Amino acid sequence: MVTTTLGDQPQGERLTSSIISSFEVARVFTEHTPTSLDFDDSGELLITSGADDALRVWDCLNGTPKEKVYSKKYGCTHAKFTHSRASVIYASTKEDDTIRYLSLHDNIYLRYFRGHTSPVSSLEMSPQDDHFLSASVDGTVRLWDLKAPHCQGFLRIPSTNTSTNSSSTPPSICFDQTGKVFTISSGQWTKLYDLRNFDKGPFTTFTLPSNPNSNSISNSNSNSGIYHSEFSNDGKLLLVATGEGVHVLDGFSGAIHQSHPNTTTTNSNNNTGCKPCFSPDAQFVFTGGDDSSIRVFSTTTSTSTDGGKQVALLKCMDTPRILRFNPKWEVLVSAERGVVVWTRGR
Image 1 (cartoon, helix red, strand yellow):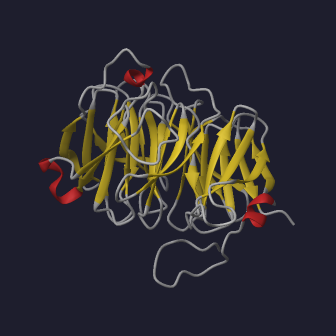
Image 2 (tube, rainbow, N blue to C red):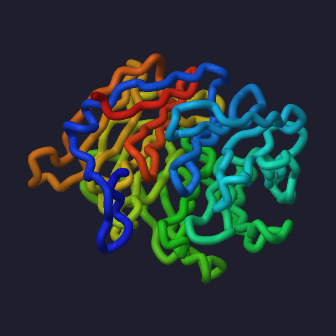
């Protein structure tokens, strides 16, 4: 197991730059091209959605396919495990923009969540309970509970329509690990909300500077919007990705901790590039490159030997579009032309 930033006495082996540098491809599954990746709470299972309208479950401990469910009529993307490994939620890509709650055990829909009038751009389960958030191209963010079909809360995202590319970047959302704080990112800003009082508006807003090398947040705009965001497991860091760069922010002040160039070409359909990720202990950031590579950067302070430096370069089959590190085990997964599983080299 790997050490995470959760708890006062985390257990497991601490990741180091030498361990990360030794990562190599262990399995490649080309059954479909994944559009989303998500691990269950135990880290033993991975679910992917694909352009072939299939949801596939993978056994992470044995590196083998486990289950396949088709959603031919409705399509599927943004698949997420609930806190039960036997059920998932996912967004539709056909027919309508409904979010579906599916039992994998018997392939039965448990509930439908209707309300969005355009495609869902982001879907996130609370790490603590049965609440989840959805963001849509219709300019809204909705709060849901798995136990009820109607949304529990509704926020309209301020328009970012400008002459820049950020106008076509869909909104992004994420929870912190307490489940009490969530973010909405659109254009060049990220707004932080208290889940219990979200109707009162954000309690703070971070805005990316026009100069990515600036060490603090400003009110200036850039030409590329935020398309992905995620908190580190301890909530101290916030990772945001734009078409121009991958930025590590202080999770409390919004000050830029580090900035690295985004070397993946953004998708012309939704203005998104590779979705980067933290390691479970937040010591490393993984991001993809158009040169068919995964670049790994240390997040430690600049006074450290590896602070902010690239510590590993992993060669891929193709340009990675999504990266996810297993929450419990030394396993990295990249979404390329297939599902690529990386593990520590011998």
